[in-house]
Length: 314
Image 1 (cartoon, one colour):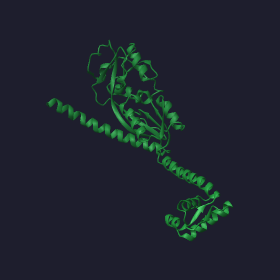
Image 2: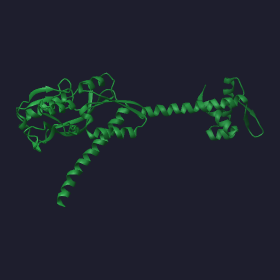
Image 3: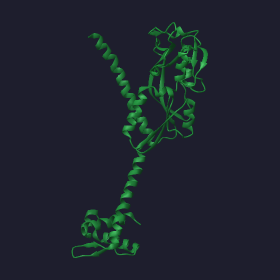
C-alpha cells in the first residue's frame, strides 16, 4: 500500500472536505480525489460517503484511519531512527582501555561528556592490555581503544593523541631516595626494575626502557607484573623500583612513594586507536568529543602556570 495515499486519506478524513484537504496538502482537488478512488479500489471498500458539506468516514474508513495514523507514525519514526543512527546518536559503542589509561582524568571527563551528549548511545567498556585491545580492535569487537602508543604505529590502525603526561618514579617507602622531591633518572642506574612484560604492553615497556637509555643506563630487569597496579604492589614489597605515568600515583598503596623525574622530557602519551578504513558516525562523534576535551585540557594547563605566578606575586 502506498504510504502517500494513506497520508492523503488521513488529510481528507481530518478535514472532512476534499477541497480543504487538497489545499492543506498543496495539490489540486482532482488529483486528490483520484488518489482516494484508487485507494478504495485497492481496498475494495468505500472509505468515505458524501455529505451536504463534504465527506464523512464509513465504518471501513474509521477502521482504516486508526491503522493509517499508526502506520504513518511508524514510517516517520523509522525515518527519524535511521537519521539518528546515521548521525551516530543511537546504537552501541564498544570502547577498550588499558588499566593505565583509566587513571588519566581526561578519560573520565571524556566518557562523562560523551554519555551526556549522546544519551542514546550505549557505551560498553572493556579493559585489557595493549596487545589484547589491538587484537579486539582489528577483529571488529571494539570500535575504539584508549592506549599509550609510545612511538609505535600499527598497520590499519589510526591513532589520535588526546593527552600527554609526565612519568614518575615509584619507590619503596624505605628506599634511599624516597624522601626526595625530584630525582634524575640517572639516580636509578643499577636498580632492579619492576616492569610490565613487553608482550603485554609494548609501548609503555619501551617508553620506560628508552627513557633510561636516554639517561645513559640500561635498567636491570627484575620481577615482571601483568598490570600497573601489580607493579606498584611489587614495588611496595621491595622487589625493585619502576617508572609509571603520573596519573597512576592515584594508587595509594602502603609502602610506596612517587617521586617526580627531573627530566621534563620523560612523558607518555595517551591516544585513541580506531580502524583506519572503517569509521562509523559514533566513532567520529567520540573523536570529536575527545578533541574538545584535549583542547580544554590544554587551555587549562596554560592557565595554571600563570595563576601560580600571580599567587607568588601576592
